[in-house]
Length: 343
Image (cartoon, rainbow, N blue to C red; front, side, top):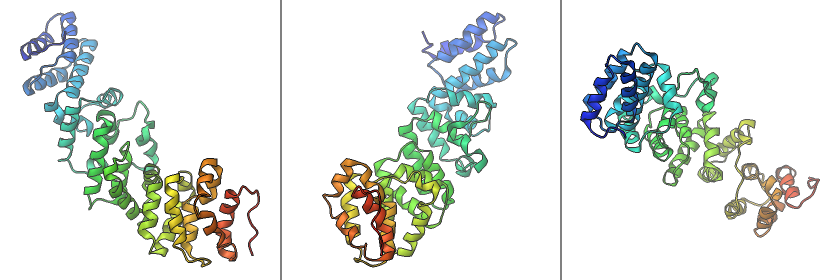
């Protein structure tokens, strides 16, 4: 039965100084399960584990008890944050925190509240490219986990994701790569924040900030592509620059496919283009809309033929330049091995 009152916890702390190794060992194990802690008791446990023990097992269990208490007690969140930020504690503590379960939600909220008072660059800075794989969850057991790695391990995703995104959106003076990097660390983008994230992503594309924008494209899906094209529709040169960026090999691998619900939007955008003109926006729609792959999915192909998309594309076959843009898409839609011959 875990200790449920402060007097019992205090007695267990005293027992960790007993002459008997067996008593100290049992007391240390019981402290890890204790539920009634005050600030002063946490401070006593911190002091006791710092003193160590002649027996290695007891010393290890005192450390485990201390870390376990930090996971459960909101008034110890400042101590937990100091470990997360690498200001206190050895590497093995952070490794243990990374491997263990998330903290209690009340502790997570307290931890994030304390973190809001910390300079952003101390925990939000992207790693060097050489160590990028470490931040992407491929960290070896000997590495000292970074603050963001630990936050993802400790804070439940439904609490961490909106908090990280709000932090990135509100830090308007921070560098764009840092803001995008923090958003990418969130495991999802809440619907209420989707449009704000899209706007920041579009801002980054115009500033040619990579590679964070590629990782974020994977999160935004085709709604991000739609938002980009809508935002830059009346700025064709800027839209063409974005097209060049998003047709690079790094982005092409994760360029999202449109869904049936996106077809009316594609149809409307194609219909808005002057027929036959060499408008660069046509090439953008074909490539970023992945029109050249719509015929690969029988259901999607059938849905496409319920729209005016095929007819709108056929308008461009007579022009030698625009024909090159739409020929492969038309061949794919009509199930032909060879695209139409261009003039």
